[in-house]
Image 1 (cartoon, one colour):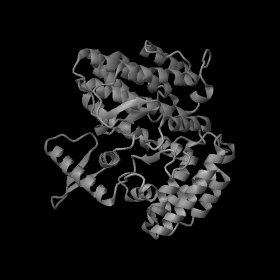
Image 2 (cartoon, one colour):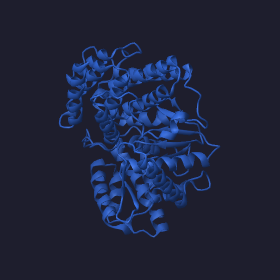
Image 3 (cartoon, rainbow, N blue to C red):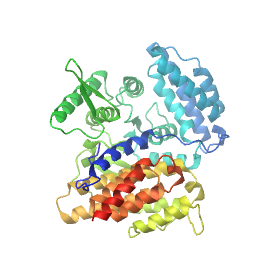
Image 4 (cartoon, rainbow, N blue to C red):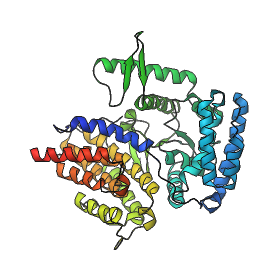
Amino acid sequence: METQNDKPMKTTGKFLVAVLGAALLMAGCGKKQAKSSSSWSLDKSGASAQLKQFVAAQETQSRALAKQDGNKLPSDFDTFYKAAETGDWQDATNLFEQMSKSVRNDSSLRGSWWSATMDAYGVFEMFPPGDKYATAFGNDIIQSIPDGSIYFGGTDPGRFVVTALTESHADGKPFFVLSQNPMADGTYLKYLRSMYAGKIYTPTDEDSQKCFQDYTEDVTRRRQNNQLKPGEDVRTDSNGKVQISGHIAVMEINALLVKTIFDKNPDREFYIEESFPLDWMYPNLEPHGLIMKINRQPLPTLSGEIVKQDRDYWTKYLTPMIGGWLNKDTTVEEVAAFVEKTYVKNDLSGFTGDSQFVQNSDAQKMFSKLRSSIAGVYVWWMKHATDASEKQRMADAADFAFRQAFALCPYSPEVVFRYIDFLMGQNRGADALLVVETAVKMPLMQGEGGQMRVLAKQLERYRKTK
């Protein structure tokens, strides 16, 4: 997980560290919003034919994997795929939830087939809330990745949307789609091997065991030196054996497995749509359109050309969504004013973007997450720069990316907490307070913004002491 502020403020530093770790988890595991339309079906999708073909392929693959592994299939399996075939997302969603309970409660059902069926279900999770933007999200990422590459989809959209819209997921065409999040699950690794063995290197059970052991040894050492990361749960049982648990530990093991894939496929290009920051990647990352490229060797710096291309790409990309008003000179105050007028008051007078976008929370979260991830790369380079001018150049790039991410989704816990952490590190307490005060006004924050309201009070107290 990305380390926090180099210069935490005196009264809120510990609080920031805690809530920032929680924010990253909230972004990936937060409560789903209700779908906007109960009438969505595959027939109504802009990618209908492709999605139908994908769902059918996943059913065939699931049956073959269950037979191969000797798993019986739950009673809801056939009815789920029948509902999926007719394209009714409501029936498909309900049946999937029933099937999921069966899998959790009956260990004989658990196997690699479940990962294949989860990919099929992802169509009904990701496309109904905003088919137009989900399709654009997937197609734009796919078109940016060279054939034969290996791509890690981190978030649900990054995995499920891209998987569904590629030419053939099972054949790795035009590139291989993997997800960083379930790597520690042996059945998911088996699913990958069933598709990609002989084409690319995928981790073995022995690789998985080694990564678990390596992490256990590392976290034990860091625990002795009081260097645990926020959220790492490490305990010693009555027999003196180290016990690790929790989401952070899983992601740390996932990071080692992703590194294994990277190292064992030296002739492939790698790209990632980030879910959770993986520390080892940062020196190798550079912005690549909506996502990021993982370079084979660490970069000496992010050149001015890379930063300009990234800024120009996102400025152009955001214009149809929210209008072309946000540029590198736009202040935090102007962004906050836009947020309050557009999202809080629903006042679209003079708005030149897409009204569908500002009414679509799923689309807002999808693209904001991507921009926030790239901002995090700039923050890493800023913190590791030794030259003052280079540090400022990366800070400027990070600030611009954060402002764009905040304008796209001002109620995202990850965006808000990462941005205010950055701002406090720049001694910009007034801007940090404005960001959090604006965020808590969002209707979607009602009942969910407790941490932000507490933080707003702490920031206000901090400012009064300065």
